[in-house]
Image 1: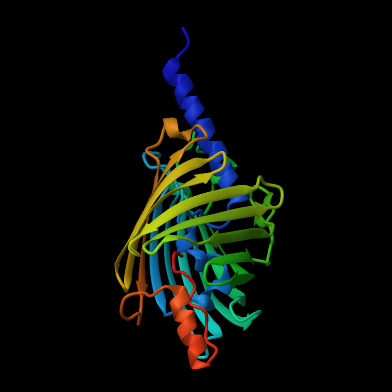
Image 2 (image 1 turned 180 degrees about the vertical axis):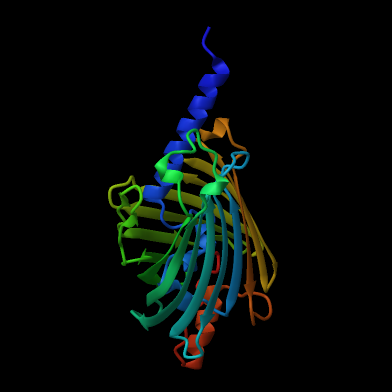
Length: 329
């Protein structure tokens, strides 16, 4: 009779190894389910499109119940300038996976132009760095004498330089970004291994359908492409009620299905949560993935009016101003 427990352990190990390998090859940037609220973390063109300064914090626990599974924490700030054309952004992200810890820190700047009376196109640049640390003492190994785990811990700094485009109107947006052009191999002299790095592309879009005075339907998508790895496609559909409560779902092809919920607690505070259930085999061994986000809007006053009303008011004043796009992101 076969050892069922042993087969399950072997299957679990294989699934985790393949999933982690997929992250290393196809997911340089941390993975987010609530990407529509987190665009500034991977598209520098977004930072100047915000209505007022905003501060956001995010925490993601992936594949809970599996030791060493990924966790991500992000702190971000987006500030529009008084000229209503430029913006500045700042991001710090801590990404942990097993014995590895990677910290991203960068500064973004964007400048936007008018394509038409209602269409804006924002150009953004981002510069910073990534601090990678591997602590071999935090792992459990079958063969502790393996040369791959001998010696001092690995630690290095990698500069980053990227760019992004963000085009939007009052009821839709599209974005294209490359978070880092400075690709290079990671080299470990002791075991003579090289991990080749490639450009990673993010293509994002969303639309707002006004179903009634107090109900909106907000589909969105995020496509990630890394040369030599499978394309990652995310589709989401959210409904917003009474300009406060948002509920919906998301699907990451061949990976996970998710439930999303958000609440505009006040004019200055938004709270969001998502839960992922893996559809690629890991669902049998993990309690899923949890993600929570807080967004603070500084200087936002009074109840939010519809974007169409605000734009009409601006036109009546005869003074061109930045479009206030629907803030479901």
